[in-house]
Image (cartoon, rainbow, N blue to C red; front, side, top):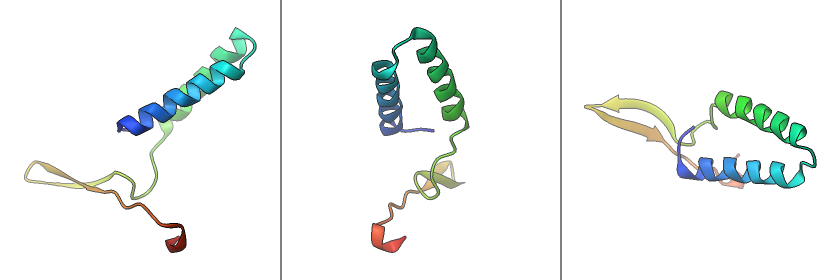
Length: 70
């Protein structure tokens, strides 16, 4: 998972978990679960998806769908 936007979204989730957790043990358990999910997150199809390399340059597909095109 790359990109500053994804990092900021992940930090926002951590802040929300922190704000909603009333016990430290529950907070740590939630953070551990989030860590596992973030490590396994593969992203969304065609959003900053690396499709190849040409002469050392990486080629990405970064198509953002409009709701009417889905």
